Amino acid sequence: DGGITQSPKYLFRKEGQNVTLSCEQNLNHDAMYWYRQDPGQGLRLIYYSQIVNDFQKGDIAEGYSVSREKKESFPLTVTSAQKNPTAFYLCASSIDAGTGVGYTFGSGTRLTVV
Amino acid sequence: GDSVTQMEGPVTLSEEAFLTINCTYTATGYPSLFWYVQYPGEGLQLLLKATKADDKGSNKGFEATYRKETTSFHLEKGSVQVSDSAVYFCALRIGNTDKLIFGTGTRLQVFP
Image (cartoon, rainbow over all chains, first blue to last red; front, side, top):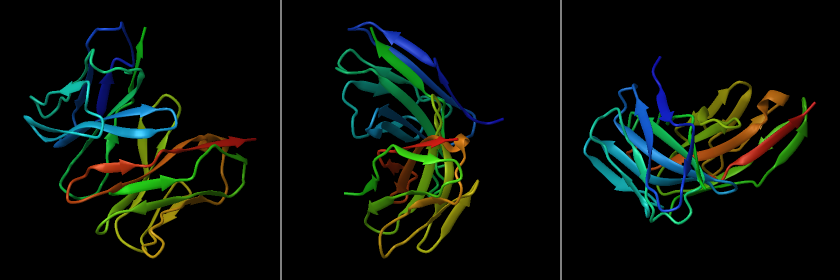
């Protein structure tokens, strides 16, 4: 079955470390997205990519970086410059043909700074 | 800019009660509108959508009608179940891409 896989489900990071969250999809979707979810704040867009080797900043890109070397993969790196990285991170993908069919989401990664 | 506003939660109901979760939007043009549901510890799942004015999206007993005159897309269900307890997000699609803007989410708690 097609879908989006995020790993790991839980991740612990020490202060000052970079960590990378994985997102892989086998839906043949062109577009992929990373959102951050904090309690009471809904989803905020970090980065998105509409095609391979191209990506754009979302609303809260500072302290994060991404790459899109393959259509199937859109890893997110949380760098030490991100001051408050503890959150639930969600990856999503869409056909991005303007069809308005919506996103498919992964099951999320919960990142905690210890 | 484009935005989505949802009623604050939590919404607490007894089983079989009627549910309304309000959602209003601000957008240029004619956005597509969505409702997503998030169960504890999981990602979001598409619940229903509507792409033009007066369209009604429906799924699993939930309904929402795209009201252009009131810029609203309220979610309703006639009889909620304990299993409907989750966080519900209203969202709109802007422009010619599939990028979505989400509301802050409304938590629904249903008790037996």
